[in-house]
Length: 108
Image (spheres, rainbow, N blue to C red):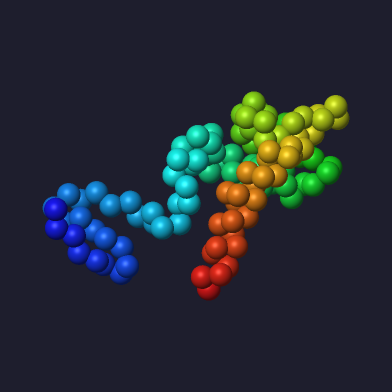
């Protein structure tokens, strides 16, 4: 199989299969074991983090995402009916959302 370097990456000639951005993926084996968060759920998780200790109230448009993340263990619903982040949710937020925000700022 012929290969040629292109901007530091190796592209396989004649096969047309290349993973874009494969350099920043980290550990692919770990990535496939984690539950996937849809973009809407990532946004909802970020809104919960912005709400802080007060939590995000129920009855908003992102309730389906928050309920899904509650089943995943990333948020929990308080006795007052507000969603707050769990330690697993804080870790996932730092890993998936804050990481990309810091990455985008460092490129500019």
